[in-house]
Image (cartoon, rainbow, N blue to C red; front, side, top):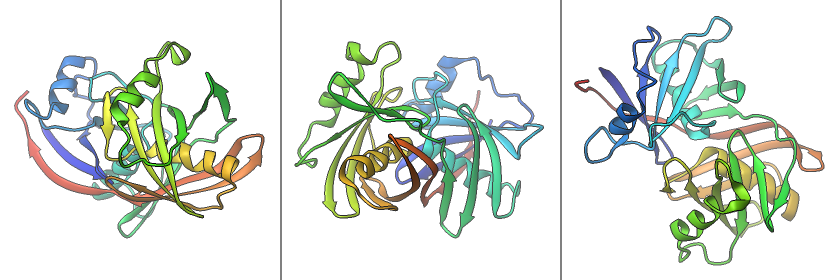
Length: 257
């Protein structure tokens, strides 16, 4: 099987051109093995690029545990780069993912990905919660560098407040009037990742609502820098949300299946 490895600010994915639909997508153990960093290719997730009669392509995303996941923002930017590398579109594209339609544009090394509208920001169990294509908790802290993100994130991810299904958990520290440092515990990966696209999007929107941080919000992650632009509509609602940052091919190869 031919595969490609891409990364977006350190969030890495196995990409497969599945326009012929030959990939065994129902085999969760196989997907998990491919994502395993010791016994497989190694990745935070696996993404299939498939045909769709109404769009340039369809994105099908799997978490590293092999289960099909909710929307992945960095994965979305990576599949846009992949589709561009395959010659599926020139500069702008329109594709479908599990959370609906997305628009995207390639501008040099950066991919600008339009995210789903956000219908509201709420409080659950004393924590700020919203859905940006995937469920996210956002918590502001003073010393993010020393925080045990895995322990603190896992406790919230598995708390009864967010069952069934759990949630992703983002911790953010304000660096200046327009910049945040963000670390994320991702469900499905069950660990801290170098970056999370839907997570930094969630943090940016909460920062605008709670801290009046202006558009665009600049985000620093362990894996690199991102920007989030948006149009606030009041009552925690946002439209025209764009996740902007680099996405790059790391290598290509083949694996025996």
